[in-house]
Image (cartoon, rainbow, N blue to C red; front, side, top):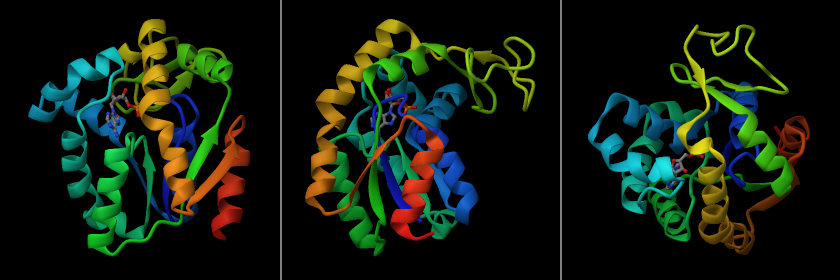
Length: 213
Ligand code: AMP
């Protein structure tokens, strides 16, 4: 399947993407994960992206399109892909449309994961992430077996720099200003699937029913 997953930070895009990869071997493409890896490795891209990420602001459209053009042409994406956290602005959506046209790739849908601000704030302030493998935990609903240690790889599990209350509040403002307009953009393209995302299982079922997988 080839999907765009839209929704505010904390709406569950990453969780849903991981669940969908098991359905047909489609790959999850998370621009946030790619950028965090670049920051950790100290690459040029990482150095350019770091300050904006830490503040909860967006990285420039040019940098993002540079990494996505290369990524979408990798062999692994031939089985399908789930775009998680991209596109994030109207210029990115327009550029993606042009790129997919050139590559002759058709998307199945753009799925909008709807969740209340209350649920999002609660999810993000309690979310913890493994610095080594990126596994996601939650101090309330899915804690690590041993405090601060990843169950999967033994890495350190921490609160992300951009998951302090101040950065979260900025990320939600940035989402409303820059990313929320994509819902109307994809509705206009006749591609939008709007789902209630309080439960990830329900989202996955709605997507599978919609695209017939
Ligand atoms: P995420 O893990 O998707 O919430 O992304 C974490 C951070 O990476 C965001 O707050 C942005 O600073 C940056 N980022 C991720 N994806 C994009 C994108 N498509 N465009 C611009 N910035 C992005």
